Structure formats: structure tokens, C-alpha cells
Image (cartoon, rainbow, N blue to C red):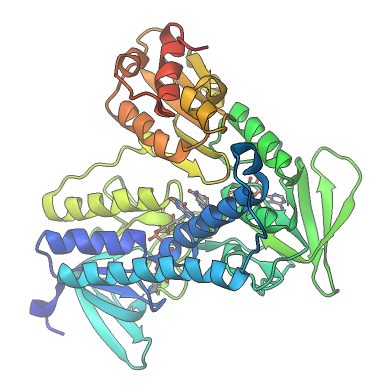
Length: 471
Ligand code: FAD
Ligand code: NAI
């Protein structure tokens, strides 16, 4: 290729980070190529992450509710059966619809989509081993690394995605296992534990730390989540580390050690889910060819404008710093294109919501009490329980609470932590308030429709700077 044929932007990876950057750049009138090796667009999130997991969570919740939560509502149901093949088909339909939709959007925005594996030949040149055979090369004035992440393996336990699985295998089991041990009580562990436990599997979650939920969840909320998940039948072993595993027998055997020095124990299970975190994925990318730097955790090192040390090569999403979340990748994708095209962009890292889609959902944004304590920052807390909210009572769905944290002097909102029905939707209001620098009085003086769960949000704000009305 000659210099005149250079693309304005070549993107390696068609996940949320890559495809969103491709669309945005297309909208900005740039000539764009997006390279994806998976065969479908949308990356981890659409293919084996956010979307399929939410399909299984939603439908397993419905099934569980029909089995256990209808009589008191005056609904009598007959023979309820689960058809696992069709249950999985519903998930596949959601995934296919969305990944095809993304392909359409790339076309609509004039993006060239190459199906194949990209690797650096030089600082401006990417070789693509095409999925259909053969090879091509593209040149870019700018290059974006958006290659995402992969599950961190557990040493000594080989993943076969059938008996020893990562989230990918756990999203596609062909039969309901009798027993499952989940290594890691973070978000993946708890979402997948919820799905299979609702379908009838005896699930034990082994977590190294003294609390579930992974990094970032408020201590009080994490305790409450654990209590509610335990009530649903999930067993927890906290402060416990899986030290080794053996999958050679009929059942998989795991040796666990108490992190606090108790006696070693051994657990067995039909299926083991390894959910101990994810790590950046930059394999086969030829980074060494161009002397690209990674940090000790394998993340591509970037500056505040997503530039690597080679300034026209940038990186966003799971392959670099920050929380591994789809909406964080999406924000960065828009911002990086703005930096390239206009020289400015914006992502507020203090204001990225997290949602765990268990039942009830757990959602949060901003600072936790433990963060503030560790920094010696004074704060005030207000809470409101869903048991005092009229809509939650009407829906017979009263577990959980809204917790707000504010600056005691200025009343500025510092964090919101919710466990309860619809927490994942409700956190959008907290995120907006935080982004706009609202005080809890601003929120409390905003009229909320009645009867809605969102009134619990308003009343938590009232409780933070004054008093709630209904509690
Ligand atoms: P990815 O989505 O991983 O995309 C990278 C893409 O690059 C991949 O498709 C890969 O095939 C491709 N690629 C890599 N190397 C090359 C190469 N050399 N050439 C061509 N292509 C290449 N986040 C949320 O916000 N909400 C959720 O509910 C949620 N649920 C999740 C559930 C599970 C089970 C998992 C595993 C993750 C979940 N996540 C969720 C996290 C979310 O999926 C990621 O944060 C998000 O996908 C990151 O986007 P990305 O584009 O950076 O990377
Ligand atoms: P995680 O980092 O959230 O949790 C992993 C847990 O495993 C930690 O609590 C850790 O203490 C524990 N652990 C590590 N080694 C262990 C051992 N040997 N024995 C016992 N416990 C051990 O990682 P997870 O759950 O794998 O998720 C990865 C990423 O995917 C997260 O960063 C998350 O952001 C993203 N994700 C987001 C979702 C959402 O937004 N709803 C859903 C699923 C994933």
C-alpha cells in the first residue's frame, strides 16, 4: 500500500471498545478499518459476557420466581419444566441479534470490517491473517489497540470449558450439574452462581477475601448481598483460598486452605468455575516488533489521552488500565476518537457505575465508606430500606436498601450504593447526580413519581442531610 491509501484509523479488536470507536470515527468522517478475529463483532461483552449472562440471569430468575414466588401472589401454576436447550437458544438469539446489529452499524458508518487476526509489522502497518485464509496488510495514520481481556487461568487446573470452565463454559453448559464450586466470589462468580443455583445446582463459592463482590463493593452492601444469596441456597466459604485442583477423577477435587490459618479441607464438584479475575489480552499482536510497553499486569501503558509511547498508537478498554467494564470501554472509545480528531475528549473515572445483576441487584457509583475512611475524608451516610417503600411493598419485593454518602459540610454527593429491586437501573440517577455535582438536598427536592422504587432513592437523599418521611 502507498501512503495515500493509509486509513485514518485502524482498530485491532471489534469488542465494545473497538466497534464503538469505529462507529464514532466513521461518524467523524474518518476512513476506518476494524479488525476482529472472532468471526462476530461485539467482543467478550456481546458474545460471551454481558449479554449472554444477562439472558441467563433474567430467564433463570423468571423460572425461579415461578417455582417459588407465585402462591403468595394468588397465582397458581401447574407443572413447571425447564428446557435447557431452549433456554440456551433464547440466549443465542439475543447474542446473534445484537452482534449482527453491530455489523450493520459498521457498514452504515462506512467502516471497513476485516475478519482476521491483526499483528504489528511496523508502527504503521498491520498484517491481518484472514479467517477465510490468506493475508492482507493495512496501514493506519492512527492505530487503536482494543484487544480486550481473557479469564485468568488457575494454575494446575486445565480449562476444558466443560467440567473446568471459565465464564464462557458456564454460559453454555449442556446439562444442569448437580454440584458446582466457584473459585472467586467476584461479580462473574456470583452472577454465574446465581444462574446455576436457580436451575437446581448445589453451588459453593470459595472466596479468598473476607467479603464477596470483588473490588469496589461497599462492605455493608456486600454483607447484605451475601445474606440474601445464602438464603437462595448458595453456600459461601470466605477467607478461603483454593490452593490446588485435580480434575482426573469422576469429580473434580479442590484443596482449600483457610486464609486465617484453619485446617485444610478438600471439596469436590461436578463442575468448577474459575472466576478469579480477568487479564489484558495482547497475545499474537506483535507488540515486541514495535517495542511496546506493558506493565507488570500485562496492561498496555498509556497516557491520559490513551497514547502509548508511540504517540499515534493508542489503547482503550480492557487491554489497559481501569475497571473492566463495557460502559467504561465505550466511554473511552468515544473519547479516544475525539482526542485523535479534535484534540480533546472526556471520561470521568470517578463516575463509572458498577452493577451486579444478581437478585436482588447490587449497584454503586462513586466512593465507598471504606475508601473514604482509608483516606481520612469525613462523610455523612443516609439510608432508606425498600421495606419502607410503597412500590416495593406492593410488589412483595422489599429486600435491600439505598445508601448515600455525602460531604458533611457541603452536602455534595460522594457515593451511592444500592442493593434491591431494579438497582441496576436506579444507579443511573445516582450517576447523573454525581456527574453534575449534586447535593443530597438537590436530589431530595427533585419530585419523584409515586409509587415508584425511585422514591427510595429520593428518601435516602432526605435521610442523608435531614430526615426521610417514611422511615
Ligand atoms: P473485548 O470485549 O474483550 O473485545 C476485544 C476483541 O478483540 C475480542 O473480540 C477479540 O477477539 C478481539 N481481538 C483480540 N486480539 C485481536 C487481534 N490480534 N486481531 C483481531 N482481533 C483481536 N461488563 C459490563 O459492563 N457489564 C456486564 O454486565 C458485564 N458482564 C460480563 C460478563 C462476563 C461473563 C464477562 C467475561 C465480562 C463481562 N463484562 C461486563 C465485562 C465486559 O465484557 C468487558 O469489559 C468488555 O467486553 C471490554 O471490551 P473491550 O472491547 O475492551 O474488549
Ligand atoms: P473479580 O476481580 O471481580 O473477582 C475475583 C475474585 O476472586 C476476587 O474477589 C478474589 O479475591 C478471588 N480470588 C482470586 N484468587 C482466588 C483463589 N485462589 N481462591 C479463592 N478466591 C480467589 O473478577 P471476576 O469476577 O472474574 O470478573 C472479572 C471482570 O469482569 C471484573 O473486573 C468485572 O468488572 C467484569 N464483569 C463485570 C460484570 C458486570 O458488570 N455485571 C459481570 C461479569 C464480569
